[in-house]
Image (cartoon, rainbow, N blue to C red; front, top):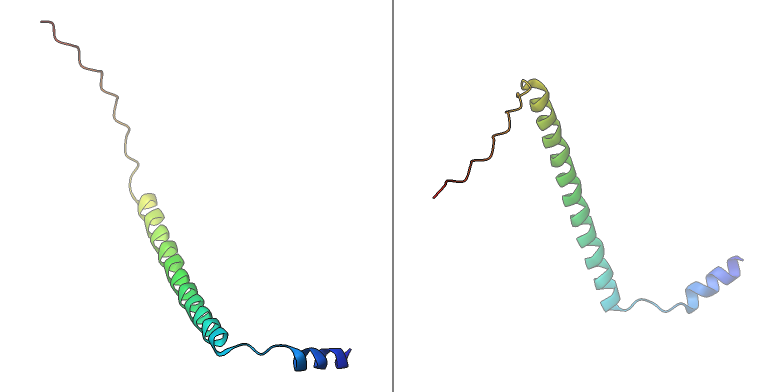
Amino acid sequence: MSNSTEARRIFAPAPSKQDSKANTTTSVARSILDAETKQREAKTARLRELRLKKEADAPAAEAKPAKKPARAKKA
């Protein structure tokens, strides 16, 4: 099996310079996007915790009675 693996490496086409640059660009862009996603999720979680804490600390607001619809005026 090792001979066939070596043969694949020898006869496999080498990536072109353009492909190498594209792969590098793609990997860098993905790492940046992943970092931004992690920051956004951390911020969302932090804000959610603060909101839930604030809602838990706030006294329960009483429901206001529904207003009756206004009557139409007679002409």
